[in-house]
Length: 306
Image 1: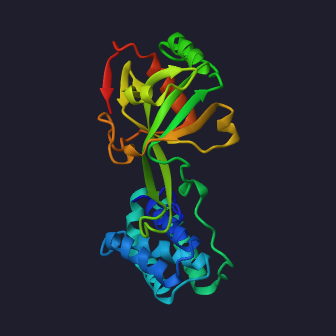
Image 2: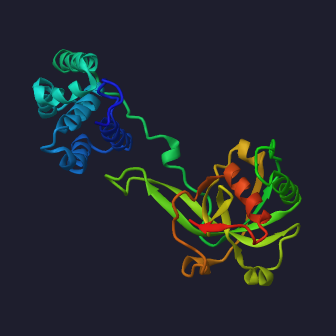
Image 3: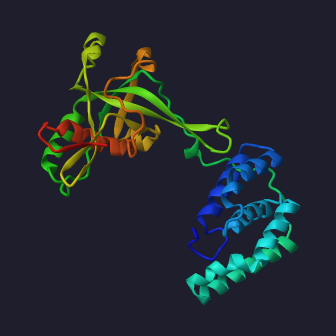
């Protein structure tokens, strides 16, 4: 079971279903279409299984709370509640847990039978972070400067080296190239509803006070990025997804500007580029640490490509 308490809502499967349902309704998908999408996407994984009740309880709970309960869903949920076989698996967790689950189901049974909720005037949209979009395009050339010093490097191996490099970066800019824009649909059920996007950037092997000419930039190589240091081994990636939110807090730590665009990067990627790497998504503050560690490398450290 993916449940962590006896409450119907406290279950991974239930949360997954309800979260997707919320997204569809928040984007104004028609009731019939939303239910059909939920059913076609999720039900096949539960049909005929010993946790089929998870699906029907999830759908019934969301529909009941929002005043859109379908009669067939209500009947399915009531049937699951009354079916002792679904309740039996809770006995594995002990008599006390079993009884609490039984009480939770009985309470929901009464809600379905005797309480009717009114639908909201408007369904809330999904959280903003699920639909935030990067302001950059593939080919954009970015200048990036750290302007706020870290609190302390005392807990880091090679902390003195990193502190020294940070001071250099505070006085200089580095160049980034947007090589890809990753898009993430807000819903797997209806991918065309909306999306969030993140710019994948690569770091040029250059640091300075004045931006070099286009001719010089075209000759620059890209530098492997330190994504993490694990037990002394530098874990490298070719590119990271830079989650820049353009908030006041981020502007207090960094200055980042787009100074040009080379459309050739839309068709031709750098040789070192590797499309999407697990764990390569970074906030600006985490990216600062990566930059410091990246430019601190001497070339003699043990490395591992992620």
